[in-house]
Length: 249
Image (cartoon, rainbow, N blue to C red; front, side):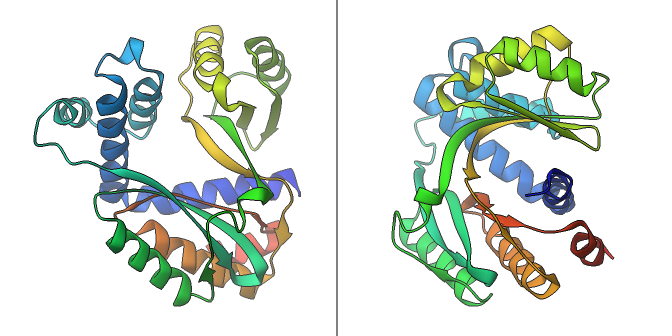
């Protein structure tokens, strides 16, 4: 898979999410609340909460919203969310993983199944595509002053497994259990907060899509991401530069 296309894919998804900022804030708030409820409201003692707050800050979420989400976790009337992974197939034979935080399993399953079906895909059974992905920690730095070579050295010293850089975007991957430690060490070493630091499903192999397949897939991903119960969507697709330019036109 071409690294350049990969980063354009990332930026395309980021751009789509930025356009839906209110929806993004809702998803970030939900993750903060769940993290604080599970591990306590102390950011320093709760790695998942620390990463959730860090991601919220990097997306310009106001401090009051962040604190409100933490406070909500400590209230007796706070919602109980179930973390559920859905798997399925998208246009072009792509494998798709959908991560959900929901207070209504039936609603989430129905809405997600419908989004697949209406956009040329179909939801599969648990385990139907997960074997094609690896669960890893992913740390993204954007518009960083640090060079690719320096980032590579710092990331490996921090315990990362791989670093890829393109278009002034650094993508660092590490073992899932090392995410908090690597993210913290990098932040201290280079003096910058990452744009995001979270666990992701990384495809082991990818499927290259043409314009028709990419158009249909992006429509399906948009439909899934528009759902309140959906936190993240991952796929094993690759969209070449020339196709991505037509999508963005």
